[in-house]
Amino acid sequence: MKKIISTLLFLATGYVSFSCDMCNCYLGLNPHFKKNTIGLRYHYTPFIGSHDDESELQEMGLTKDDFWETRTRIELHGQWYPTQKLKILFSVPYVMNTEGVHANGNEAVPGTEVIKGIGDPLVTANYQVFNYTGDSTNFSQRLFAGGGIKFPLGKWKLLEGAEAHERVHQPGTGSWDVLATAEYLTKYDRVGLNVNVSYMLTSANSQSYQFANRFNGNAVFYYQVNIKEVSIYPSIGTYFEQAGNDHDNNYPMHNSGGIILFAHAGVDVYFHNFSVNTAFQLPAIQNLNQPQPEMKYRMIAGVTYAFD
Image (cartoon, rainbow, N blue to C red):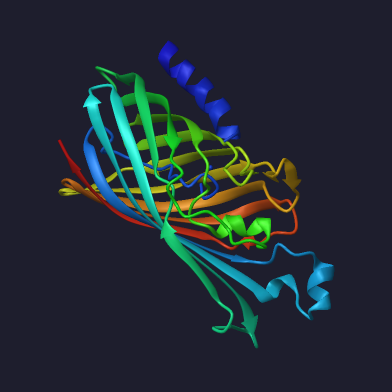
């Protein structure tokens, strides 16, 4: 009973404040949590809007709705267990960012800019704090906590004269950043709750630009459906992202940062050592420091192979 009460208290505090595009990490279900894995994950996010003020756009005969962006990321990811209670996770993204202007209601090909390249790899180490499974019940819970480092290997430098806000379109950041993470999962029979939180502590790059520190978190309920050798996990939940202002030469970039609260729906399918993961996230609350483009939605899909 004490373990159940402590679990409910944890969930009550974890549910209110919880998040991933700002942090470039994926927080989701992983029934293969005790196996080594390797996989590919695809992220697609369209935006509409501009970093320019409305008055500047009016002088050009434009509005913020004339500008569009898409951010695409293909991510090689995996996890490895060097010991029973320690898992190492890695992520290496390939980024393709596109921006342009609508012409007569269509996305204009002339003037469209595409920026692509390898992004910043991320490596984290998570320690299993506890893993409890009841002897006479179907109740279980586990907690991982740890941290990691993001390496400045992606393309990030701007050409001379480029506006500072253009840095958000670059595949990399140019900075060494530190990530703190925690993952909690509880399950009773076929119903479960997955809670993840992470906080990215950033540093300035060699051009004196510092992306803001970021918080990401999520709370996702799921249900396990078994059909012969296939396990299906439909899920619903919420994701939360928060970031402050970026800084250019210690000067705050007022058109950066803010908060986004997503409504999440997804389906994960597991068959033997293979899994297919899908998710759709729609912004329910989007309070960004203006002016900057607003997110329309986010789609995530991936395939993973697990091995001992």
